[in-house]
Length: 120
Image 1 (spheres, helix red, strand yellow):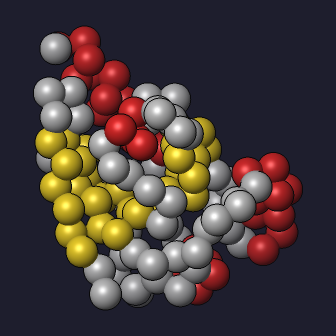
Image 2 (cartoon, one colour):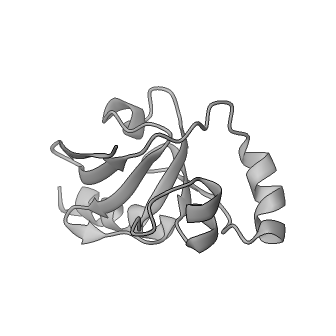
């Protein structure tokens, strides 16, 4: 069962969908090495959130047993005490929107949060 969660702070407003995906002990080096061979997109580190993000495609949906309708970025891991952890974002969450804008690639996160910080 999924829960939609709105996380609102002065700097970040995120729409998250939490999914039960066991990713404990995730090793980003392993993911980077295997993603091209098995059809998974390359994960990317979000410096703005302090999280490792994976764009959702059909192979990600199959591999992590997500809903066919899931879109956005799968959170693979979160840096302890980073911005994502402080907002309650956990491994297995799906980032759908940031500041009311849909996200599909990790660069979207950096872009929207960077623009927000410049205005703020």
